[in-house]
Image (cartoon, rainbow, N blue to C red):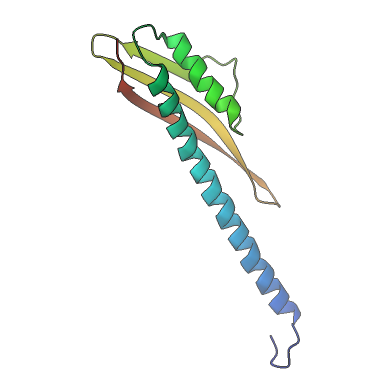
Length: 124
């Protein structure tokens, strides 16, 4: 930039690069926060429905409802996307789910596959 207040072409390009970098950083952070929010929401939902009468199918449907509610890409018909195993003897529930997140960076879109595998106590 010149000292007399005029902006040069190079200055405009530099400002655009800085703004785009900030935009990309915000998009990456928001995608990361959304992923952790989905994981926490699934944990909370399963925590509310767990009990003696909970079946694997009911738990899978609970996870599918959380995924439907959020802006993610997943194939509802694919059996391997959401799996829940309840071990009543050990008192644990193991769950796994997978989905895709698409981030729009204006010039291109980035798809990322997220896999969550976790466990929690099962009352039953």
